[in-house]
Length: 259
Image (cartoon, rainbow, N blue to C red):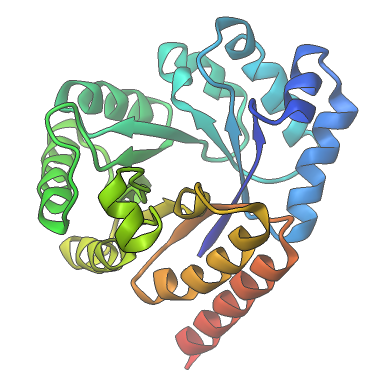
């Protein structure tokens, strides 16, 4: 299971400050902390600001000069794919929806730049609340991949953990997501194809929880997600308790594979 560090996001004032002042030491400190904690890749979220987007090559070069990890880059790089040429190894574009037109263009660019691609199983025509809707979109993704020649092995499918704030959901489950749908979706996605990867953003499962409760929630959910076939997870690697769970899961999976 790939562990993708989430702590380089423009909503983080430290990261944003390092970007806007081109503070390479602070940027490297953020990257090193996550790598030393056990992250196997880093998610870089620059939002849609043209100014910050222009810093992408500097950011990639600065981080990878000292931290040997692949980067998950915001989908803004699709507008200037040449930015990915500075990346060492295989970059990943995170994330596009399953809209057919957007998907075709994204897959063509990912293919030309030898990048991976995270696809959210939502579209402008369908934001599924059930398992079947997610599988319909996954089937469309497979069709587009066949048409464009995009290898399934470079695709990450995200069934999208979402918390509903509507009153009925709050009464039934405190606004928390229906994780049973996510677990079954992950399992069925792997049945559809063993070649593509599955991914989730774990923090999406605890948006409405207090900071104190978020870690416990994540520690509880991750083993169930792994058992359902999760291949990659975006999480906070500086959460010691959560990383302990993640490392135990990976150790257990490695031992099972060897057996």
